[in-house]
Amino acid sequence: MPISRRRILQAGAGSVLAMMIPGKTFGQDSTKTSEDVMEKKESENAPPLYPKFDTHMHAEGPKEDLLPVLDALGVRRVLNLSYSGFREPAELLAFENKLLADMDKYPNRFRFAPAFNVTRFREPGYTDSVIAKLANDIDRHGAVAVKIWKDLGMMLRDDDGRYVFCDDTRFLPIYDYIVSRGLVIYSHIADPLAGWLPLDTPSPHARYFRNHPEFHWYGKPDKPSHDEILRHRDALVARYPKTIFVAAHLASMEHDLEETAKFLDTFPNVRIDTAARFADLMMKPDAQVRAFFIKYQDRILYGTDCDFNAEELGKTPEAKRQKIKSIITAHQKNFTYFEDTLALPPDVLRKFYYENAAALFAKSKK
Ligand SMILES: [Zn+2]
Image (cartoon, rainbow, N blue to C red; front, side):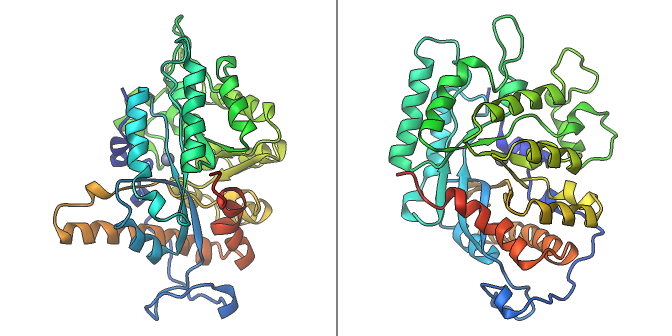
């Protein structure tokens, strides 16, 4: 059964609204000069906008209503990510068709990152059918990356009941193919460490695990540990040193920037994104986060995990307007954090928001 994205969002782990942390001070005056900004918003009081490349969106359905949101946030480009979600092949295709809706109309705005089915991995012909699917994703839709998801390590099991990890040798022909086509591997492997801790441990993800007991593995010694799952991810990264891996959600190491730094130091082919982990950053000392962003300024991508479904914006024009407004407001608070609270230097912000991603994803593979 696929995991409903909507349910995940309602639980807060991926919600843009969950990126807000109350009690932080916002709205300091910007000291940036006009050369530091590339766009200005219409309102005189609004802070200036840096161009953005959101590398972690799930935008389903017609894109028309999304465009004004992107414009308001300065998001010039989007990597629209699929994820396998433990879906059967036909379900995955149906989901990806929603992601692809209208994307051809805006060839400079959207890039596509497909996923592949994992549930049928024991069936004859599995590898060939996955490779044929991915070939189509690249040749027809210009796919620039392939997403792998936490069903590898946390859902998929072998005949003997053991969990199957992302570096399982049976998937290697698929990775070989992805690598041969020069695509990025975009990985969301494991959950936040909070999933292995008591529910009352302070964490932005506590509500998610309260609502998803199937992924709350504290006190379940028969389940793989957080560390074990990530070691398999690391083995995969090590196997393809010339391939760029984007480890989503602060590499699932949001609890410890020092560990994340070690991971980046060990694997030069890794980038990380910030998707749905803004609240984790905001809980840490500002000076520590600032130093991390400056040190790894070429390796961090601006991703939000914004889930935009054109069909679920609301039935009335007013409901729709409110929903769009809430999305914009949530993102703007994140900008305030990076630009004012952390006061990251303009060249670091430009890399983080746009340039690091553009270097990987600007060119369609079509
Ligand atoms: Zn996501």
